Image 1: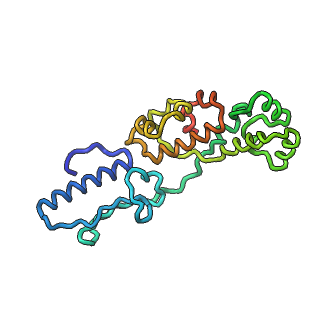
Image 2: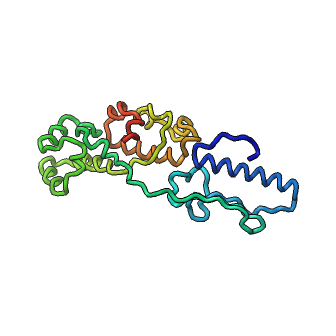
Length: 230
């Protein structure tokens, strides 16, 4: 390397540093040998041709591995590569976290609806998400309201995986506060060296689901770190 560097903390940082060093080396080579031609410098994180990226699609999401290639005059001169990530167990579902919450923690479930569900021994969000089509029809005949399907649908929305998100300074912020932040603000707060825009977008998608399903008082009471620690 051209100068002493801090050890990179993430694979994305490492590749960004590597590409910069390659670029500087090419500049010096062209100064000493003006006729040198570089065909391409490519960074590809387990993606198909044309999907090359350093920041947006970066480790650890690229389960197919990564490689860096450098070609001079159409011939491969150097290549670095990384092995694919090992298989990991599925991430937790939002329902794993909110399933034991009382039914009134669903957005829009007022006292009347809570009493109706309790009469039918449906006291938690997880129980509502798990009821069968036959059970739903029994409830529908009594209640005669399309809102019943809305409540059931909200509970079932929580059957989605929580994406990986690294520990950052955002951990102490409540889900309600996170929800109100724009993606670029989240990226700035978390730090571009700790997260990528792809990770921020995944987090924002989860926040949108929670905003639809979970009552705001629950979002105001739960910090992001608690959500991610399950």
